[in-house]
View 1 (tube, rainbow, N blue to C red):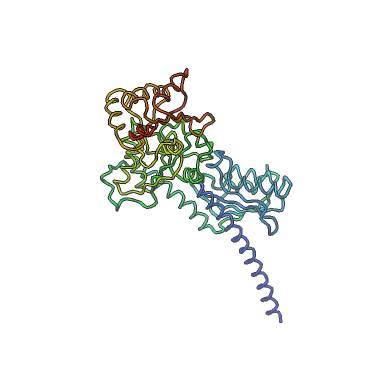
View 2 (spheres, rainbow, N blue to C red):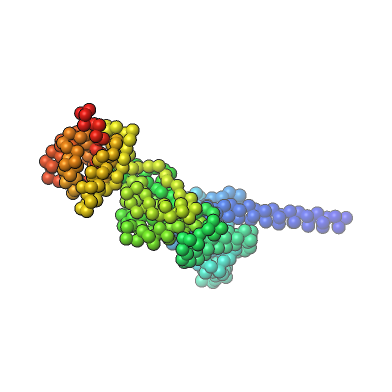
Length: 421
Ligand code: ZN
């Protein structure tokens, strides 16, 4: 019965072919998961696995953005891991699966690692890498022959790339469109946008919260008072490189509008100050207000704040706390102090170390020598200090020093304290 015989043979062959196809799909799906993880981290979504037998011996996702190293392509990362896993320089029994056609550099790495089979999903013009992998096929100069298979899960592989680039292009376009705040009705606001107020340490770098770090890593853009001041700090917490915008009293109007535009276009904007809670005693207030008026989401993360920290350890009553920020330096200084020092409860203000003694003397003019006072400085740092006592005592201590260092938090007890002390 030759007919039956031949049909059985065909059936066996068909099974083997679909078995191979199934494996290709399976490994390519694994590469696609890695590609998605690269996109999440801000990298062009390319993923790669290196397989020996039925075992994945190396995994890689593009790490270009994260590492700041332009050679960290998914293939390089996966080959590196495979070499480590197998413990040999050459991957002569391995197949490399990658979602995007390898570029010339990665093709070179494939040759050097002597990988005999390359399977990829899509070719993408945007990467400029098209067709380079075929140079390793029949190049007599290379002591390497490889099989290249293309188009495995091609649609998925190219979709993950085009989605990524579409989102990026959309962002770039919205960034370039200048709209006035009035144009933002709820209809033109894209979902997902948020203004995060992220507190940073006031001295001790360990006071950064896990959530603050996570938020800064996730943000599309970080707005800070001084980029030179904030860049090293962001590096310290492994925040990947991303756009940094400076925000200070000279550009606050324009920046506030820009922040509104970015949040409205769906961006996640993190606002930080030089230290402590942003939006308190810095120009951040204007941006917060503008976002709220535009109907956008504003949220603050709890964290380090000099005034709350000082109030807690001051020993002064905390049932009523009035924070007044920095007192004016010249014009209206006396009137300001007279007004705030009449308030009930504990008054909190900030002052620079260069003016602290003068400020305490001005306060003494108004309160007399016996009002309870605390000057806290170098909070959370090695030389943290609380000078506690009467206004007069605090002046004596500080004026006796050659210099005072560190930003100061000044706390003045309410009038009722005079009678009690
Ligand atoms: Zn490459």
